[in-house]
Length: 180
Image (cartoon, rainbow, N blue to C red):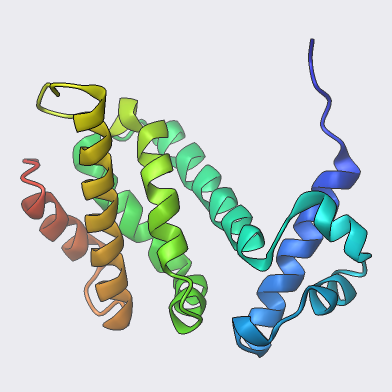
């Protein structure tokens, strides 16, 4: 059985995400209401709640969409583990306005929560030089890696991306002891 994708639902979700991102550029996260998002998207609240249960879930949807873009990009380029840091920092440099909004609104931690999931999905690309004792050990390793990448990204953002993506990739490869 195949499930069909409802183009109206996809469009509504996109409008809600776009409206919320526009509002985030105008005012703080905590001051934005669901009603304002719906008004900006020109949709009713019922449509919002059909797709999302909170403002946070909208941000997660935006982050997920960004991950899909990143994932598709690295898939088409056939990047290996040693090329991932450069792809990572190059990608996020292009989206630093979004990251700044997350930081300013104390929502940057959502990115870390999603990174763990994304690293699991990219396990075949990221790879590992070592064998793990168990699935639990793998899970902890992904959590550590996600937290490290998230922290490095946040520090880089607070420094206004002063270092180039190439310099950040070089440092990251050294930190994680990945030799080129």
